[in-house]
Image (cartoon, rainbow, N blue to C red; front, side, top):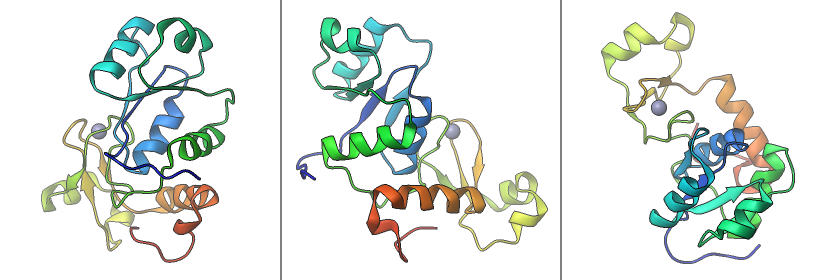
Length: 167
Ligand SMILES: [Zn+2]
């Protein structure tokens, strides 16, 4: 796997890659996903914000020529993630599960009031951490969903397999 130096890569994904966006966000990578944006605007956004454009659309790479782009030929999100990780030398950041899967905002600690009013009774007894999204208001906690995602990520990133950092 090639290693990448320089700043942490950021991504812009096309309308076909919503699930890949969630995986990249779970890993801590800043990833925009706007399914309604048109191709020209998507390329302009990626170039302006120095994001790597990930797409399933050959036309977008060939004709619109983003500054940085990668064509993904598979429709399977975890295979796409593996491909992106290899192409750009990605490894999980310290920010694992610290970014909203839905809107890409960095999460903050949930307040006592948010935990009391927004988290269902059973998960409320978990040790946490409970995190809140300042963008869309979702509350996150380390339940079975996080464990399952972590297991799937460990198939690609062996360093997550045993006792790594995070939930
Ligand atoms: Zn959010």
